View 1 (cartoon, rainbow, N blue to C red):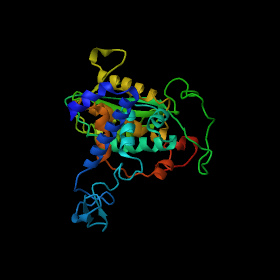
View 2 (spheres, rainbow, N blue to C red; view 1 turned 90 degrees about the vertical axis):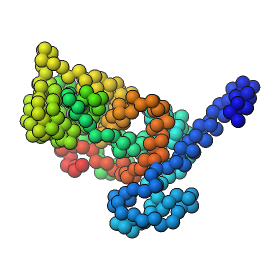
View 3 (cartoon, one colour; view 1 turned 30 degrees about the vertical axis):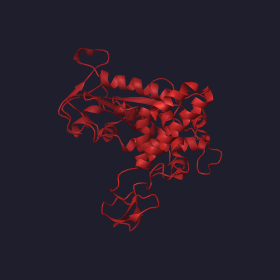
View 4 (tube, rainbow, N blue to C red; view 1 turned 45 degrees about the vertical axis):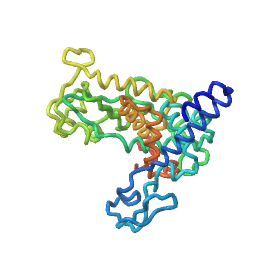
Length: 342
């Protein structure tokens, strides 16, 4: 069959070849989507692991009865593709856009969806990518340092009855920030190890304290044999509390005692990644950091990153609804005199 197709392809017109390519992509997308996720596992609603078989759904997938909440589920329950009205080929095209880190408008144009749908699809896939991140491994040495991004209150506030801009809107991201580390910057704690692992997590507003640094590093560098940082005063107490066995402080003006090149290189790649989007809303910043870490984690694999992301999306699940993303509270708003709990 393949040889017959190859014989006819040179005789096709350019438009016919494009139609054939789209048909093949759609067939591949439907095939991957049909594989679905695992047959058994924890209930996607309550997380209970006790489940018994209870028939099959209309597509032949095994149904399970949760002993915790008493509801049935299958491998498609709460999955990204099964809970969407869009066909698998549209999701595959969007996964390709995500793998290439295209903007929302570019992704919407390529996939034939509106801008609002493109935004929701992006956050669904970001939630799937976050669930696939492996725990950070310290190895024999890891480098830790923070970077700072401008706070962004981006969004359509015209229809919001619960939020009003606490400051004048800015035309450019760094407008009004000034020199140095001001409280209008958001601290992102980053780390990289000699095993190739990396993490990036939203830490606080402005310069981090020892408690804030410890909270961001907890569960990541606990008991590490060696952690190298810069000379910032928040690290010694935070790393001591986490049981780090050796802490090396590096003066950026004198690298004779060592360097933190691994995390410096990570900062450079992160800055280039975020620059593509021309500003990221602070309340959704962690999703973009998870997206970046996912790309770092799977960049060394031999699989095509576009197809890999779609396979993960077809088997992945999500919990946050569209309304949940819209109503997500903005962090660190106490600086502006707005009381919020995140």
